[in-house]
Length: 75
Image (spheres, rainbow, N blue to C red):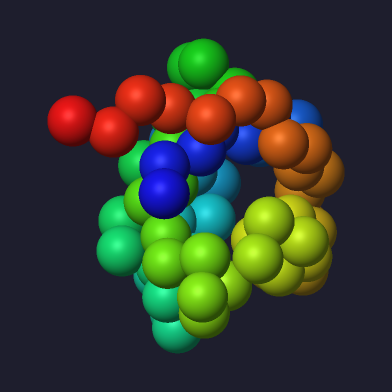
């Protein structure tokens, strides 16, 4: 499953990298690509291991705000 989340509170590219590292520590996250410039993260994950709520909570623990934006087409 691939989904996009809007992120607020990032101040630079290092913030985006920090979010990616924290998300990739979650069991079930296949990839996380966060963009400071676009204020979003695109995440591919296993719904059987991680939920949207767990993703949002992880981003919040990193010091940022997140909300579900939209599902992404899988290719």
